[in-house]
Image (cartoon, rainbow, N blue to C red; front, side):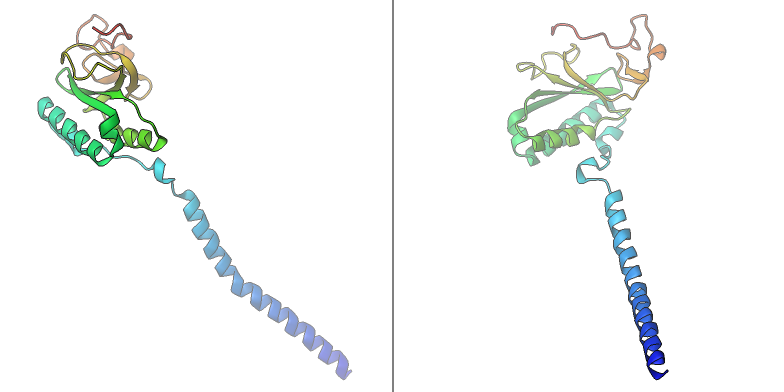
Length: 191
């Protein structure tokens, strides 16, 4: 009988030890899972939200254009290869909006990512609603009023379009009669 009670005590002690070990490990696993879940929920560095630049808040279109151009120049200088490989110009469209024209090319994925990060800061309703990647020889601009063609990056969200005055509006709210609210025409040969 003495052997039976020793055996029972051993089993009870073993089960208690196992339960104690499991209970000590649970918070540690949950802590690791929580930190893993938090890391998984963070967006990758390249997908961070890019905020608009304060230069876009200028009320006067000429001041806004000058400030946007200056900020782009400084950011290009910080990027090394971009300042050597890409030319840019900031053009007024109407009295309230800007276009950014880019000429040249990039050689590396990181350069393209940097270029996009720079330009996206200025893509907002009252700033630049269009970016044009133009053919070599377009820059410097021959005319502030001419329409330049190239690959367009439009800053308007669906169902909006860019009207000729630079505003993003639904197509039916852009005046189709040919005044400053008409949608931008489809690309045509460079003047």
